[in-house]
Length: 350
Ligand SMILES: [Zn+2]
Image (tube, rainbow, N blue to C red; front, side, top):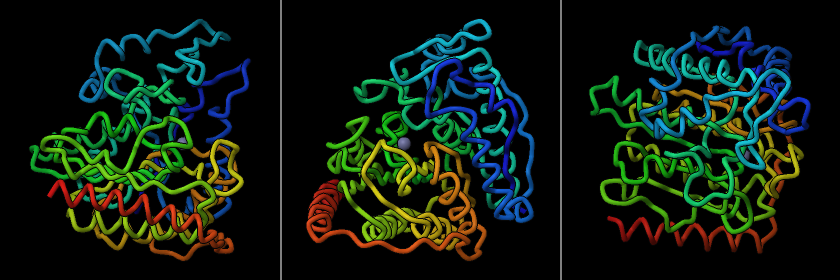
Protein backbone atom coordinates (compact mmCIF):
# COMPACT_ATOMS: atom_id res chain seq x y z
CA UNK A 1 0.00 0.00 0.00
CA UNK A 2 1.18 3.50 -0.81
CA UNK A 3 2.84 5.40 2.04
CA UNK A 4 2.26 9.01 3.05
CA UNK A 5 5.07 10.37 5.23
CA UNK A 6 3.86 13.10 7.56
CA UNK A 7 4.98 14.41 10.96
CA UNK A 8 3.90 17.30 13.20
CA UNK A 9 7.53 18.54 13.12
CA UNK A 10 6.86 19.79 9.59
CA UNK A 11 4.58 22.40 11.21
CA UNK A 12 7.20 23.95 13.49
CA UNK A 13 8.88 25.87 10.66
CA UNK A 14 6.67 28.88 11.25
CA UNK A 15 6.79 32.54 10.12
CA UNK A 16 4.73 33.87 13.08
CA UNK A 17 4.42 36.70 14.05
CA UNK A 18 4.79 37.56 10.35
CA UNK A 19 2.36 36.59 7.61
CA UNK A 20 3.86 34.38 4.93
CA UNK A 21 2.06 32.20 2.34
CA UNK A 22 4.43 29.30 3.12
CA UNK A 23 3.15 28.50 6.61
CA UNK A 24 2.11 25.44 8.68
CA UNK A 25 -1.57 25.80 7.77
CA UNK A 26 -0.72 24.53 4.27
CA UNK A 27 -0.23 21.10 5.79
CA UNK A 28 -3.49 21.36 7.72
CA UNK A 29 -5.27 22.06 4.43
CA UNK A 30 -3.43 19.18 2.74
CA UNK A 31 -4.22 16.71 5.55
CA UNK A 32 -7.85 17.81 5.68
CA UNK A 33 -8.08 17.34 1.94
CA UNK A 34 -6.62 13.82 2.14
CA UNK A 35 -8.97 12.88 4.97
CA UNK A 36 -12.09 14.30 3.39
CA UNK A 37 -11.39 12.53 0.10
CA UNK A 38 -10.83 9.18 1.76
CA UNK A 39 -7.13 9.02 0.84
CA UNK A 40 -6.09 7.80 4.27
CA UNK A 41 -8.01 4.61 3.51
CA UNK A 42 -6.15 4.25 0.20
CA UNK A 43 -2.66 4.85 1.61
CA UNK A 44 -0.91 4.29 4.96
CA UNK A 45 0.09 7.33 6.98
CA UNK A 46 3.61 6.85 8.36
CA UNK A 47 5.67 9.04 10.69
CA UNK A 48 9.10 9.56 9.12
CA UNK A 49 12.24 9.20 11.23
CA UNK A 50 14.69 11.98 12.05
CA UNK A 51 18.11 12.19 10.41
CA UNK A 52 21.13 14.47 10.41
CA UNK A 53 20.60 17.32 7.93
CA UNK A 54 24.25 17.57 6.91
CA UNK A 55 24.65 13.87 6.24
CA UNK A 56 21.57 13.73 3.99
CA UNK A 57 21.78 17.08 2.20
CA UNK A 58 25.56 17.61 1.85
CA UNK A 59 25.45 15.37 -1.23
CA UNK A 60 23.54 18.10 -3.09
CA UNK A 61 24.35 21.30 -1.15
CA UNK A 62 27.53 23.03 -0.12
CA UNK A 63 28.14 22.10 3.58
CA UNK A 64 28.97 25.74 4.40
CA UNK A 65 25.56 26.79 3.10
CA UNK A 66 23.87 24.08 5.19
CA UNK A 67 25.70 25.11 8.37
CA UNK A 68 24.52 28.69 7.76
CA UNK A 69 20.84 27.74 7.65
CA UNK A 70 21.09 25.40 10.65
CA UNK A 71 21.49 28.38 12.98
CA UNK A 72 18.00 29.20 14.16
CA UNK A 73 16.70 32.16 16.19
CA UNK A 74 15.23 32.01 19.73
CA UNK A 75 11.49 31.18 20.17
CA UNK A 76 9.15 33.81 18.75
CA UNK A 77 11.79 35.31 16.47
CA UNK A 78 12.20 34.88 12.74
CA UNK A 79 15.42 35.15 10.79
CA UNK A 80 15.06 36.32 7.18
CA UNK A 81 17.52 34.61 4.85
CA UNK A 82 16.24 36.91 2.08
CA UNK A 83 13.00 38.89 1.55
CA UNK A 84 11.10 35.65 0.64
CA UNK A 85 12.63 33.04 2.88
CA UNK A 86 12.68 32.62 6.66
CA UNK A 87 14.17 30.45 9.36
CA UNK A 88 12.24 30.15 12.63
CA UNK A 89 12.83 28.49 15.96
CA UNK A 90 11.95 24.90 15.05
CA UNK A 91 13.18 25.03 11.46
CA UNK A 92 16.06 22.67 12.28
CA UNK A 93 13.59 20.13 13.67
CA UNK A 94 11.54 20.32 10.45
CA UNK A 95 14.70 19.89 8.35
CA UNK A 96 15.82 16.88 10.43
CA UNK A 97 12.43 15.31 9.81
CA UNK A 98 12.75 16.05 6.06
CA UNK A 99 16.19 14.41 6.12
CA UNK A 100 14.62 11.37 7.83
CA UNK A 101 11.89 11.31 5.19
CA UNK A 102 14.54 11.12 2.47
CA UNK A 103 16.20 8.16 4.21
CA UNK A 104 12.85 6.43 4.82
CA UNK A 105 11.55 7.06 1.29
CA UNK A 106 14.71 5.57 -0.22
CA UNK A 107 14.40 2.51 2.04
CA UNK A 108 10.77 2.06 1.06
CA UNK A 109 11.34 2.54 -2.68
CA UNK A 110 14.36 0.23 -2.81
CA UNK A 111 12.44 -2.48 -0.98
CA UNK A 112 9.56 -2.58 -3.42
CA UNK A 113 7.16 0.23 -2.41
CA UNK A 114 5.61 1.72 -5.57
CA UNK A 115 4.38 5.06 -4.22
CA UNK A 116 5.74 7.26 -1.42
CA UNK A 117 4.36 10.74 -0.73
CA UNK A 118 6.29 13.14 1.51
CA UNK A 119 3.91 15.76 2.88
CA UNK A 120 6.57 18.00 4.35
CA UNK A 121 7.83 21.54 4.42
CA UNK A 122 9.63 23.78 3.73
CA UNK A 123 9.57 23.17 -0.04
CA UNK A 124 12.89 22.68 -1.84
CA UNK A 125 13.10 22.98 -5.61
CA UNK A 126 14.52 26.55 -5.63
CA UNK A 127 17.46 25.58 -3.37
CA UNK A 128 20.65 25.09 -5.39
CA UNK A 129 24.15 23.94 -4.52
CA UNK A 130 24.99 26.99 -2.41
CA UNK A 131 21.50 28.38 -1.80
CA UNK A 132 20.09 30.76 -4.44
CA UNK A 133 20.33 29.04 -7.80
CA UNK A 134 21.15 30.28 -11.31
CA UNK A 135 21.12 33.94 -10.31
CA UNK A 136 17.65 33.85 -8.72
CA UNK A 137 16.95 36.85 -6.49
CA UNK A 138 15.93 34.72 -3.47
CA UNK A 139 15.55 31.15 -2.24
CA UNK A 140 11.79 31.37 -2.90
CA UNK A 141 10.68 29.90 0.49
CA UNK A 142 13.07 26.90 0.06
CA UNK A 143 16.00 25.89 2.28
CA UNK A 144 17.04 22.38 1.24
CA UNK A 145 16.28 20.54 -1.98
CA UNK A 146 14.54 17.37 -0.84
CA UNK A 147 13.81 16.01 -4.32
CA UNK A 148 17.47 16.45 -5.30
CA UNK A 149 18.63 14.69 -2.12
CA UNK A 150 16.19 11.85 -2.83
CA UNK A 151 17.48 11.48 -6.38
CA UNK A 152 21.08 11.48 -5.19
CA UNK A 153 20.45 8.91 -2.46
CA UNK A 154 18.53 6.60 -4.80
CA UNK A 155 21.47 6.72 -7.21
CA UNK A 156 23.94 5.95 -4.41
CA UNK A 157 21.73 3.14 -3.08
CA UNK A 158 21.59 1.58 -6.54
CA UNK A 159 25.34 1.49 -7.07
CA UNK A 160 25.31 4.49 -9.41
CA UNK A 161 23.79 2.66 -12.37
CA UNK A 162 20.36 3.99 -11.41
CA UNK A 163 18.57 6.61 -13.52
CA UNK A 164 16.19 9.01 -11.82
CA UNK A 165 13.68 11.26 -13.56
CA UNK A 166 12.29 14.35 -11.85
CA UNK A 167 8.97 15.74 -13.05
CA UNK A 168 8.43 19.25 -11.66
CA UNK A 169 4.84 20.43 -12.07
CA UNK A 170 5.10 23.46 -9.78
CA UNK A 171 4.04 26.77 -11.35
CA UNK A 172 7.62 28.01 -10.93
CA UNK A 173 10.83 26.61 -12.43
CA UNK A 174 12.83 24.24 -10.19
CA UNK A 175 16.03 26.22 -10.64
CA UNK A 176 17.74 24.54 -7.68
CA UNK A 177 17.18 21.08 -9.11
CA UNK A 178 18.34 22.19 -12.55
CA UNK A 179 21.52 23.73 -11.13
CA UNK A 180 22.38 20.68 -9.00
CA UNK A 181 22.10 18.20 -11.87
CA UNK A 182 22.89 20.41 -14.89
CA UNK A 183 26.03 18.50 -15.87
CA UNK A 184 24.76 15.08 -14.82
CA UNK A 185 23.42 12.53 -17.29
CA UNK A 186 21.90 10.23 -14.64
CA UNK A 187 19.12 12.64 -13.65
CA UNK A 188 16.48 13.66 -16.17
CA UNK A 189 14.76 16.85 -15.05
CA UNK A 190 11.57 17.75 -16.89
CA UNK A 191 10.03 20.96 -15.65
CA UNK A 192 6.66 22.39 -16.71
CA UNK A 193 6.36 26.00 -15.57
CA UNK A 194 4.99 29.39 -16.46
CA UNK A 195 7.06 31.17 -19.17
CA UNK A 196 10.39 32.01 -17.52
CA UNK A 197 10.26 35.60 -18.81
CA UNK A 198 7.11 36.30 -16.82
CA UNK A 199 7.60 34.85 -13.34
CA UNK A 200 9.99 34.18 -10.44
CA UNK A 201 12.78 32.94 -10.52
CA UNK A 202 13.32 33.98 -14.16
CA UNK A 203 15.14 30.75 -15.09
CA UNK A 204 14.30 27.54 -16.96
CA UNK A 205 14.42 28.64 -20.60
CA UNK A 206 13.79 26.18 -23.46
CA UNK A 207 17.42 26.38 -24.60
CA UNK A 208 18.77 25.31 -21.18
CA UNK A 209 19.07 21.57 -21.88
CA UNK A 210 22.06 20.62 -19.73
CA UNK A 211 25.82 20.65 -20.23
CA UNK A 212 28.48 17.98 -20.83
CA UNK A 213 27.17 14.53 -19.91
CA UNK A 214 23.94 16.26 -18.81
CA UNK A 215 23.22 17.70 -22.26
CA UNK A 216 19.72 16.72 -23.40
CA UNK A 217 18.57 15.68 -19.90
CA UNK A 218 17.31 19.06 -18.69
CA UNK A 219 13.98 19.87 -20.28
CA UNK A 220 12.08 23.09 -19.68
CA UNK A 221 8.54 23.14 -20.99
CA UNK A 222 7.45 26.77 -20.78
CA UNK A 223 3.73 27.47 -20.74
CA UNK A 224 2.65 31.02 -21.57
CA UNK A 225 0.61 33.30 -19.36
CA UNK A 226 -3.13 32.45 -19.59
CA UNK A 227 -2.54 28.79 -20.46
CA UNK A 228 -5.46 26.62 -19.36
CA UNK A 229 -6.17 22.91 -19.10
CA UNK A 230 -5.77 22.04 -22.79
CA UNK A 231 -2.24 23.46 -23.02
CA UNK A 232 -1.28 22.07 -19.60
CA UNK A 233 -2.46 18.60 -20.65
CA UNK A 234 -0.46 18.88 -23.87
CA UNK A 235 2.65 19.96 -21.92
CA UNK A 236 2.12 17.03 -19.58
CA UNK A 237 1.90 14.49 -22.38
CA UNK A 238 5.15 15.90 -23.85
CA UNK A 239 6.79 15.68 -20.42
CA UNK A 240 5.68 12.11 -19.83
CA UNK A 241 6.82 11.01 -23.27
CA UNK A 242 10.32 12.46 -22.58
CA UNK A 243 10.38 10.54 -19.29
CA UNK A 244 9.06 7.33 -20.80
CA UNK A 245 11.58 7.28 -23.65
CA UNK A 246 14.44 7.85 -21.18
CA UNK A 247 13.43 4.68 -19.19
CA UNK A 248 14.09 5.83 -15.62
CA UNK A 249 14.30 3.45 -12.65
CA UNK A 250 12.44 5.94 -10.44
CA UNK A 251 10.33 9.04 -10.98
CA UNK A 252 10.30 11.84 -8.40
CA UNK A 253 7.58 14.45 -8.56
CA UNK A 254 8.23 18.02 -7.43
CA UNK A 255 4.54 18.41 -6.78
CA UNK A 256 3.61 22.06 -6.65
CA UNK A 257 -0.06 22.91 -6.80
CA UNK A 258 0.32 26.64 -7.40
CA UNK A 259 -0.64 26.38 -11.09
CA UNK A 260 -4.12 25.34 -9.92
CA UNK A 261 -6.68 27.95 -10.84
CA UNK A 262 -7.50 30.22 -7.94
CA UNK A 263 -4.70 28.84 -5.73
CA UNK A 264 -2.80 32.11 -5.26
CA UNK A 265 -1.89 35.39 -6.93
CA UNK A 266 1.69 34.43 -7.85
CA UNK A 267 1.15 33.38 -11.45
CA UNK A 268 -1.20 33.39 -14.40
CA UNK A 269 -1.70 29.73 -15.27
CA UNK A 270 -5.06 28.06 -14.79
CA UNK A 271 -4.96 24.29 -14.47
CA UNK A 272 -7.88 22.29 -13.11
CA UNK A 273 -8.12 18.87 -11.48
CA UNK A 274 -7.87 16.96 -14.76
CA UNK A 275 -4.26 18.10 -15.22
CA UNK A 276 -3.19 16.82 -11.79
CA UNK A 277 -5.18 13.62 -12.08
CA UNK A 278 -3.73 12.92 -15.51
CA UNK A 279 -0.21 13.62 -14.19
CA UNK A 280 -0.77 10.90 -11.60
CA UNK A 281 -2.38 8.45 -14.05
CA UNK A 282 0.33 8.94 -16.68
CA UNK A 283 3.10 8.32 -14.15
CA UNK A 284 1.32 5.22 -12.88
CA UNK A 285 1.16 3.90 -16.46
CA UNK A 286 4.96 4.12 -16.66
CA UNK A 287 5.07 1.30 -14.09
CA UNK A 288 8.08 2.79 -12.28
CA UNK A 289 8.23 3.51 -8.49
CA UNK A 290 7.23 7.11 -7.76
CA UNK A 291 7.98 9.48 -4.88
CA UNK A 292 6.04 12.72 -4.53
CA UNK A 293 7.27 15.75 -2.59
CA UNK A 294 5.14 18.79 -1.83
CA UNK A 295 6.62 21.99 -3.29
CA UNK A 296 4.27 24.99 -3.72
CA UNK A 297 0.49 25.22 -3.47
CA UNK A 298 -1.25 27.53 -1.01
CA UNK A 299 -5.02 27.09 -1.21
CA UNK A 300 -7.28 25.54 -3.85
CA UNK A 301 -4.35 23.55 -5.25
CA UNK A 302 -3.87 21.74 -1.94
CA UNK A 303 -7.60 21.25 -1.50
CA UNK A 304 -8.26 19.94 -5.01
CA UNK A 305 -5.06 19.38 -6.99
CA UNK A 306 -3.39 17.20 -4.35
CA UNK A 307 -6.20 14.62 -4.09
CA UNK A 308 -6.58 14.62 -7.89
CA UNK A 309 -2.86 13.81 -8.34
CA UNK A 310 -2.89 11.08 -5.69
CA UNK A 311 -6.03 9.42 -7.04
CA UNK A 312 -4.37 9.38 -10.46
CA UNK A 313 -1.26 7.76 -8.99
CA UNK A 314 -3.44 5.18 -7.24
CA UNK A 315 -5.18 4.28 -10.50
CA UNK A 316 -8.55 5.62 -9.40
CA UNK A 317 -10.86 8.19 -10.94
CA UNK A 318 -10.62 11.95 -10.39
CA UNK A 319 -12.71 12.82 -7.31
CA UNK A 320 -12.79 16.54 -8.17
CA UNK A 321 -13.76 16.63 -11.84
CA UNK A 322 -13.29 20.33 -12.61
CA UNK A 323 -14.45 21.62 -15.98
CA UNK A 324 -11.74 21.51 -18.63
CA UNK A 325 -11.05 25.05 -19.83
CA UNK A 326 -9.62 25.99 -23.20
CA UNK A 327 -6.83 28.44 -23.94
CA UNK A 328 -7.09 31.29 -26.41
CA UNK A 329 -5.56 30.69 -29.86
CA UNK A 330 -2.77 33.28 -29.35
CA UNK A 331 -1.72 31.46 -26.17
CA UNK A 332 -1.53 28.19 -28.12
CA UNK A 333 0.59 29.88 -30.77
CA UNK A 334 3.05 31.13 -28.19
CA UNK A 335 3.11 27.73 -26.46
CA UNK A 336 3.88 25.98 -29.76
CA UNK A 337 6.65 28.49 -30.48
CA UNK A 338 8.32 27.83 -27.10
CA UNK A 339 7.91 24.07 -27.52
CA UNK A 340 9.52 24.11 -30.98
CA UNK A 341 12.43 26.09 -29.56
CA UNK A 342 12.93 23.35 -26.96
CA UNK A 343 12.70 20.55 -29.51
CA UNK A 344 15.18 22.25 -31.85
CA UNK A 345 17.66 22.62 -28.99
CA UNK A 346 17.20 18.96 -28.00
CA UNK A 347 17.68 17.86 -31.62
CA UNK A 348 20.98 19.82 -31.70
CA UNK A 349 22.15 18.03 -28.53
CA UNK A 350 21.73 14.66 -30.25
ZN1 LIG B 1 5.88 27.42 -6.95
